[in-house]
Image (tube, rainbow, N blue to C red; front, side, top):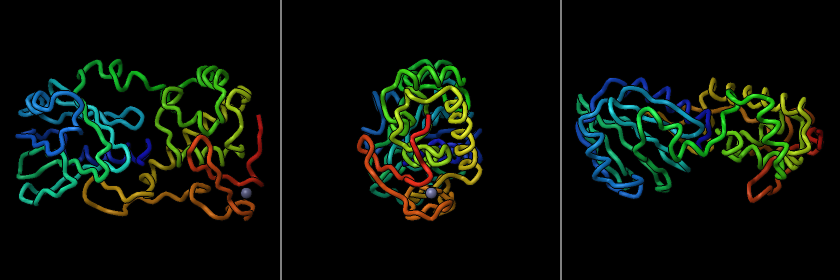
Length: 270
Ligand SMILES: [Zn+2]
């Protein structure tokens, strides 16, 4: 599942291909990808121009001249830029025809991704974005401390709660706990303000590092038709041996999510 760094990589990559280009027509092959009325969606964006792409957490916001739409890739969603005469396959669900006989195509083998028309100027105050907490980059230590202090969940589960802080998924939640030398099952409410300040800094560093490296490839994933471009060196998620102490990495389930940690390096520290 793409997390904030992957979505940011898609945003930056796609911008190079679509900004300033017109939407000449839209074909929707699987209507459930579009939240709301499909015909209205097609009418709203046909004749529009892609002006910019914003990102909030794991959501992309395609800004046009008069309208915008939010896109969430969920498990397997991808955008491709292809020539219009390339055949549409069974996983192609939405096609935006652009100029120069090129398409922006939304491809999703699992069909979990969604697109939804939103207000161009007020999308942050609208669903689905208004339910999201701030990103690690924007949240203050005091705010994060208050949010975690009232949270009875394990810290790793709290990191996944998009209403507390948005953009972190399972992979980077594991990585952040590793860099904090913290057992992922540590109760979030027990963290001191000093630890919360560290947590914010570590989260930013982990995300920025991944953005720099272009996101991970747990699932192959591409914005412009290039496979396997993204590969981040993960310290603990999916690993067998700790790179610091060489003890085995342990995998447990925490609130139904696969959780990797080094029992030797990561302790319950508050
Ligand atoms: Zn270790």
